Amino acid sequence: MSLEFNAYSKENQLNPYPAYHRLREEAPVYYGDWGKQGKFWVLTRYKDIDRVLRNAKDFPNSLGPGTKGMTDDGRPFLVLNGIDPPDHTRVRRVIAPFFTPRALESREPLIHDVCNDVIDSILASGNNPFDLIADYANHIVSAVMFDMLGVPSSLRERYKAWTEDYNRVQGGHAGEKEKANFRDFYDDTYLLMEERRRNPGPDLISILVKAADHEALISEQEAHDNIMVLFVAGLETTEKLIGNAVVALVENPEEYAKVLEDRSLVRSLVEETLRYDGSVLNVMRTAAVDVEIGGQLIRKGERLMLALASSGRDPDQFPDPDRFDVKRSPNDHLDFGEGPHACPGMWLARIEARVAVGTLLDRMPGFRLDPAQFDDSNRFQSIINRGFLRLDVHFDPALASKRTTT
Ligand code: HEM
Figure 1 (tube, rainbow, N blue to C red):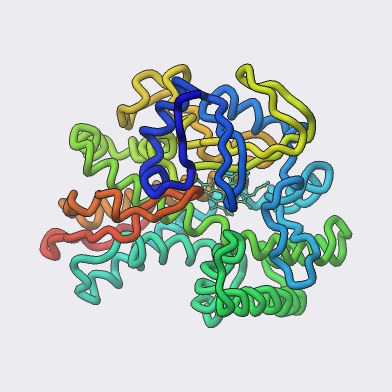
Figure 2 (figure 1 turned 90 degrees about the vertical axis):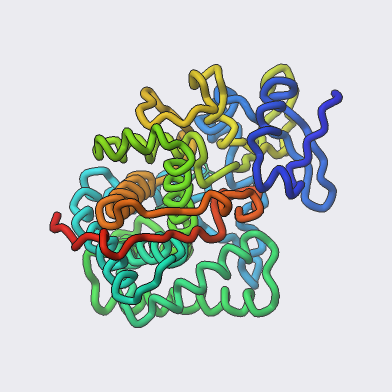
C-alpha cells in the first residue's frame, strides 16, 4: 500500500478532511502503527463506521484502554462509554428519561434565558470584540449542564475548572497538578451526592443517587462515575459545535443569507454543521472476534478508529459532500455516534446550539468575525475534538437589540 497516513501529525489533527478523502478512496480500512501512541485500524467509509457502531457485541467499549488508569487504586471507572450491555443498558436506562426530546423541550425557556443573560453581560461589560468560545458558548453550555445536574452556584467555577483536568487525565497527558485536581473532583463528587441525598431535587445527581439508594438499579460507584462523565461530556463538544456553526455561516455567505431570510433554518444549520464540520472527529472500538471489513481481516483484540468526520464527507452517503448546505435533507450524519452508545445528550446539544446561534443572530445583527482567524493554526489540535481556540466577534452596540421573551 503506497498511501501513508499519520493520524497524529499536526497537519491531520488540525484538518483531517484532505487525508480522510484520500483514505476513503484508496484505503478505506487502513492499518497504522504510531509507536507509543498505538496501532489501530482507521475506518473512513460511512457504511463501515455505521456497521461497527451498531454492533456492540463484536466491537465492545470495555475492551479498549478508554478509561483505564483514571483511578489511583486501578479500579475500573464505570462510565457509560467504558462499559457494555447488559450493564450499559441498566445504567443508561436511569438517565434516559432526562434526555428525551420531550423532557428537554421544557428546558428550552431556561436555555433562552441563559443565552440572553450572557449577551446582556457582554453588552454591559463593553467587551467588544468578545470571544465566541470562552465568553459566550462556554458560559451557556456550562450553565445549562450544571443546572441539569443540580450543582449549587457557589461550586460551579470550581467544577468547571475540574472538567478540564478530567479531559487531561483521560487523554493521558496530565501533570501532577491536574492529577491532584482530578482526585479532588473525584472525592468532592461523593460530597455532592451526599448533599443531594439530604436535599433531593428534580436534578440528574438526585436521580442517580436515588437509583443507587432506593431502587438498587445501579451501584453507588456507577452513580458517582457517571455523574463525573456527565459533568464533562457535553461541554467542550457543544461549545466547539457552536463556534463551528458560526464560522461555517460566515464562510458560506449564500447559506448565511438563507438563514437570515428564514430563521427556522437554524435547526438544519446545526445538523449540517455536525455533518460538515462536527466537533467530534473520531471514536475508538476494539474487535472482540476476528472480523472482515472492506476486504481486510481485523483480528480479535485489534483496535479501530472510526472517523466520524470522514463519514460526513462520504459521497456514497451524501451528495456533493464538501458543500455546506443549510437545507440538506436527508442528513443522517454520525457525529453523535449510532447504536447503543449513541450520544444521550444529542437533543440537549441540538437545542443549545440552535438557541445559542439564534440568539446571537437576533441580538447582535451584523456581527463580524475576521476570516483571518479561521486559519487552521487557530484550531484546537486533537485527534478527538475539532473546534477553534478563540473566535473574536465584533458587533455594533447601536444595532444590538434588547432581549426578547420566549
Ligand atoms: C455537539 C455536541 C456533542 C457531540 C458531537 C457528542 C458526540 C458524542 C459521540 C460521538 C458519542 C459516542 C461515543 C462512542 O460511540 O464511543 C457520545 C457519547 C456520549 N455523550 Fe455526547 N456529544 C455531544 C454532546 C453531549 C452532551 C450535551 C452530553 C450531556 C449530557 C453528552 C453526553 C454523552 C455521554 C454520557 C456519552 C456516553 C454514552 C454511552 O457510551 O452510552 N454529549 N457523544
